Amino acid sequence: MNMENHQTKFNHEEWLEHFYRFIETGRQFCSELFIGLISISQKSLIEALKGFRSAVSRLKAQDFIITSLLTLTGMFGVMIFMAGLSLFGYQTILWLQNGVWTEFSLFVVFNFLFENTALQLWMTQPDSWVGLQKVFSWILETVPLSFALIIPGFSIALFMAGTLAVAVVYRYYQLQKNNG
Image 1: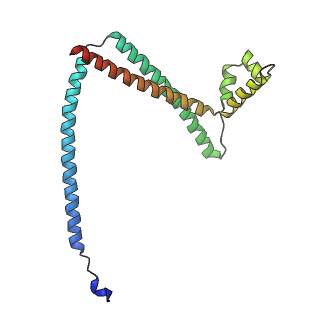
Image 2 (image 1 turned 180 degrees about the horizontal axis):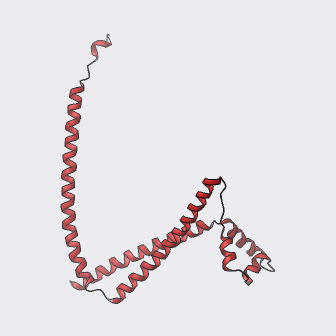
Image 3 (image 1 turned 90 degrees about the horizontal axis):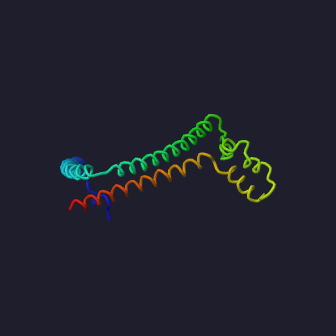
């Protein structure tokens, strides 16, 4: 068989025309979708604001106090997280400058917090519970300070955000139930 007879010519103009029609159809679809989403969002926002105003007018002082405490605790967690992330960033910058990783272990904080105390004396020269001292010493030397700040800070912030969300939703439904 002769393969040259079975080949068809590619029509670039026809292909471009189909491509441009496809692009125009996609543009029209996205435009209509955007307009529809804006309309739905506006209607939803108006209804949500009505419900929000109704609920806020019936809030008590204890609602604001609890919300403030949860928010402050969450922000404290965020500050701890950011301190750990900043320390890690500082260590990274030092490593990029000189190629040597600068370690900051928990022992630095332990020595700062418990300087000249019986606990520090026991950690440096244990008279009893030597195995426990070795475990504490290993933990304080091994765990990086940045890790010890990032994980608890993130956990506190996430837990408080979740608790705040649950409290707000619960209180909102309480107010809606009492209203009806």
